[in-house]
Image 1 (spheres, rainbow, N blue to C red):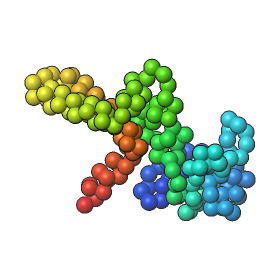
Image 2 (image 1 turned 45 degrees about the vertical axis):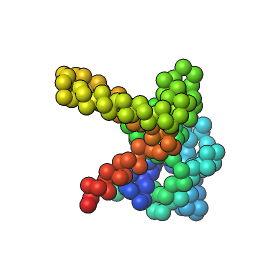
Image 3 (image 1 turned 60 degrees about the vertical axis):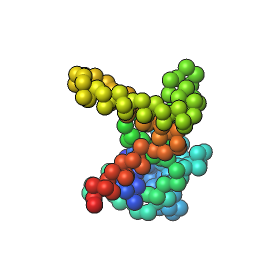
Image 4 (image 1 turned 90 degrees about the vertical axis):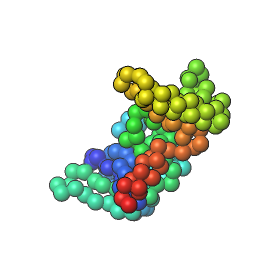
Length: 178
């Protein structure tokens, strides 16, 4: 059994970590689709077999001592079961993605999403104004609190639009690279 690090070929983003036994590795090499061993279900599984979010394998690399494998892939949809592009998304984004997917009753996030895109956009505007006011006239603690509110509501807005925080990270990375 080897840990398999799954990395998006186009961006270099680490998408997930899974496990491969010899059979999963053989099937992956033969089909150019990612196969893994589920330790909890004790069976082979093809990524996307139920969700449709498959991973086309562009390259397989063993590490220097052969006890781990790197899969460079082109994903067809999110890699994470939460609906997030990556299993290594910020905790807040994972929580919002899960709430958007599962829609638990009583969730503030769900109430915002159900109020619609306009309501989510208005909340981002309100929080941005509150942060600006705090930055000019209030304590550092208040600035941090208002910044947290803005980030949270921005993430909800992204989820309401069906976007992923990873897309924002990609845009920032492109800007930084010139």
